[in-house]
Image (cartoon, rainbow, N blue to C red):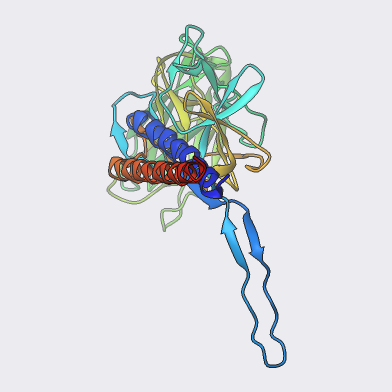
Length: 396
């Protein structure tokens, strides 16, 4: 049987595979996070008709004579170039700008995706809505701290999340006390403190001028047992505080080191304190580094969790698992897990999605190439058949 017949058949099969790949690319032109594929061909073994001959005395060498036996698909590679961005405005939509994959879990299986269209289920778990896969990341502790070196967990933002109260242990007063203030001038500055249950109490500091740039300080938090009376507040000629840099009121250290004693200004104020009341979650936002920040009813914001990204040495080695998901293979390597914007991983953009990276102009060109290649190989088969027919007709 003619070798060209089998070469033509192999060409039909290979170009049919190219058509399948191209058709799948076009079908997913609007699929969020989809990565297009390309087909690569290579020739098969060649049959040697005559071997090469070496040069001899007075005779030149000869080249080998070989007849190819067709074509086969060498591989189908995935193109991981960045897709265009689509602005959605949804707070749970995330787009990776650069390398990396979102990490999700279905049962005991780990998957990776570029499709960041997330949602929350009835229990507050962050999921991929079409697959129900649970988004992986790091949960914050009750103080909003995140350990990105710790194990991954399912990210949750349940409604009714409570921000725990924190008892105040320190407060800071800063600003200027007028060194030219007449004796008897008083300034009162207050700040709210909190106990371990989140109950507020008011810390009041009253500064009374003694004249000549010196002041006295009275402090109270509402409990007479904690009152401070007549503490000296003095400054040198350069306006630098020379008296005690702090006082203790009911277990709270009040830092006075930021006070100055210049003339003509009264800017002393209660600056900060480190306690907080309890609060319930009202809303949340996703940051460019994948941090989920919650806004609570006590007027404060606190970190709830952080999305994890995985990167690969050879992302083309990942296997497509459907649903815009990928899984690892022996040639992709293990994921290098970390936060967005670190270790070569891309940053995140909230309220946007990465669209398919399919280029329709290239895909339609590939359709033409595949069609013409298929037609040409079918013509080889037709021609081979005609030759065989002629051979059969030699015997009538």
